[in-house]
Length: 196
Length: 196
DNA sequence: CAAGTTTTTGACCGTATGGTCAATAACGTA
DNA sequence: TACGTTATTGACCATACGGTCAAAAACTTG
Image (spheres, rainbow over the protein chains, first blue to last red):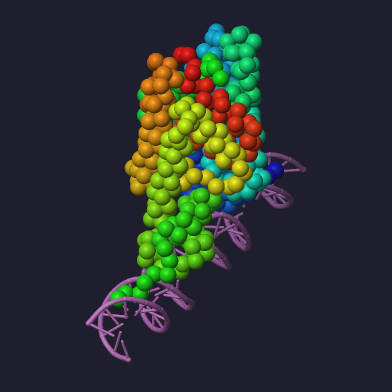
């Protein structure tokens, strides 16, 4: 019996993500969000509660999406685990050198979070662990395949890949081109075969 | 004959750096800066021109300082180039897991810059190239020593190290602890010996 | 000690921010 | 078709922002 909404929450969150990815949380104004989503301020407020809460929603969705994407890339059949990681890293190099002004919401949250344990930090930490988990799974398969040195530490290598991709993202934003970023990705992969 | 200033520009820039490192450019208010530097608004404005200009000054100084620090670490006598890089990376791991809320101004500029070629981007790009240059120099020495594989690409490896350290910084902020970050640093170093 | 120059001080300003309110519109149901 | 419920709309608000102004202060030099 209530009046139904004219919008889909997922659409709104998606539009908001775009705004946040380009401007960040602090620099994005409510007006930016209103314009991007098409909703009125009050509707936004009713549905989500405010800028910060909306960012949190966007962040969660971004995290799920990112995990899903990496998971799919690393789980693709018909290639060895190592080949999949290689393909994934090369794709990241291309994506990050595309020259757009977007920054992943995870990185934005990391940089803009103010406290040690505010909601932003919490979600972000969880996201990083989740992402590392995906890498770890793939690396574990590689190890079982015998494609990794015996003494390789799957757990820290997983975190290592998260670090490298975050760094590549930043470098891409700094204007480092596709060629260099690809070379960096290949360098990064060498860690998998390196001796101590 | 003019009235002399009561402050040293370098002191002010240094205090401002602290504020920017903790809050970022957008989120730092003029009041924060006034409080931290001890100057009045107008004095700040007279001497620097405004928030953005002050950030730029801080950024430049931060960049010089960072380059100097890395340069010194990598140039230390009495150790092979590779040992120096190793020591440097391990020190970074400790620094980034210290748990403070600071983020290097370079990273902040990277994330907060709005255009492709505004002053922030320009300074930041220059800083990254400068930093990569320092790594490259050390790596070149390593190669001459025969400590690097023949086919190692010193240039891209240098950028690779910049990327890894940026990533480690972000992870540190995400709460990744010293142990893990140290393991990541060691993983990263393996790229130097890895086969293709 | 007076003149000249610049810094400092603190009040002030326009704007734009995130957020709120009250009135109205739109829908499902009875 | 009338009712109840919620969404929407657009005006509204207090605040805090970055920045500016004009007057007073402080130092050096002549």
